[in-house]
Length: 274
Image (cartoon, rainbow, N blue to C red; front, side, top):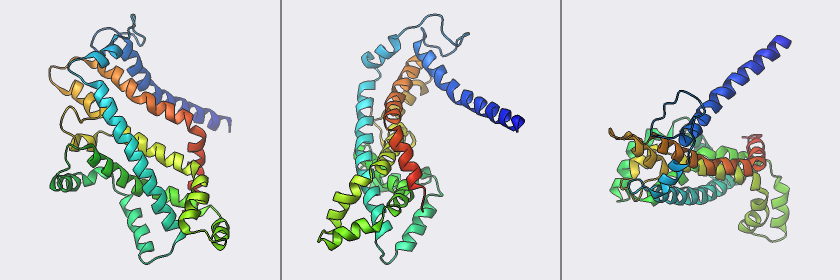
């Protein structure tokens, strides 16, 4: 028993170090002088914040514009994606209608395939409707994909809410919309927090679809901008890239710590029923 416990803690320690070390290395690289990521010591001998300042003053790299573009895309994707997930999941959990079982099966099958498999079809569709290089195209992709990804968690959460609450309100003369917004919506805070955080995080750090849809420097997001910062052959601004990557992670870290309690509640309660 003791040997098993020691082995378990040893494995957890190794996994923790493997997860934390790359993040610490990026942080230390963003604080070192020069442009090279290589250093003979883990903690640089001289530290500087110049790379963070250069991100916002560089005439070549438009980090503030990338940041605002990413914030816009992530905010509206979270807003529309959460609303679509909430309404669609509630309808599937509470109402019985023709095609419901087939729809659930289709959503289950779609969850088995990674989103990037649809890249070509999405690109062709957006090209046909003249929406390439448009933030709203990216918001549309993220919002619609959010429903497919989070529907079962949200539906599982609504399945745990007693139907008697809604039945009592309906007997008193309330409509289904009143029941949802006055009773169900306030109870959905844990699930809605989890879903919103997942959607926001995905939209904030996504590279594949943003790279596919957005083209101009005025439209690209942080992930695409940081990639282009170091992808050119003559690029040497690796420490500035590290600083940008650290700032990219800060909003997500703050949100996860701030909403940690609701995040855990929403995930565990929503997963209790399918």
